[in-house]
Length: 88
Length: 276
Image 1: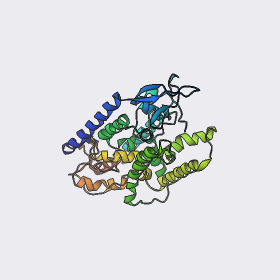
Image 2: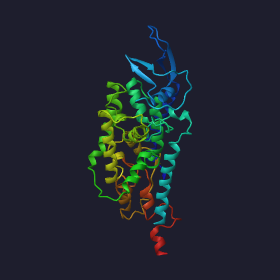
Image 3: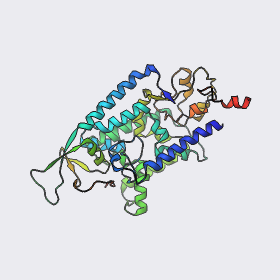
């Protein structure tokens, strides 16, 4: 093992910089999802703000779906969180 | 030879340890929001981390740029290149084990290594973006890791049913991938893996590299023979470039291990041992 030669370092620092910018943006970005309301549909659905970290976690079990340009939560977020099996 | 065996065993144990550690039920739930750049289905309840491919597919479907997931993969890729493929990926470990099965071995044409970039572009980004994250044409629907980790246990437990074109397509892909893993070392990693495609360009600039001394090279080509991804390390060693500076290297360090003239003169090389 070893570290990259000095001539390759500028490319590494560039990639690292881009990665850190992406991570910072991702850490602070939030998303609006339509809250799941049991049993009824409303003309003015309740919105919920979730972090990108949560959206990433939701993607692991299809916790959010996109319909007609909006993101819809597919499960009740008030329930305790935990490892869930992907429904698909 | 003892030197070689020690190092190979070390990688084997790291792979085995990763498999057990990262696929165990006691893993903290908070890790599911992080992407681990290895092919391990996050739908498996034992999996600690999110699969970057699954996350990218969903984000493409959501029409949201995956800053956090892509940032994580870029960060790890910039630091370590494809080191995770060689040392952590459970599917890579399975392929390593399958290749040990004695059988006729085959070569794959070099152009096939470009298929994975097409898979990444089409089945991970473009098709889910235009057809939605639940499209049956996304990579997840054919993913052999998902078939092994989720579909197969589902069949055994009785909640997955062998019906529909999707199921049989997934099963056929899994069988083909396993068959080719016996015939050609790391065939899936080289030809189809979208995580490999994502990390491959980062191998060219990563901080972590494999180092083999240029001045001591006697062109014995032992490194070429031992390389699991057949990336011909000698060509780069002779040019003074680290052998891992190629998209398909998985940084297994086997070329460095097998080298009869290793980097540190304090450790005796196998030839020197024989002479003494």
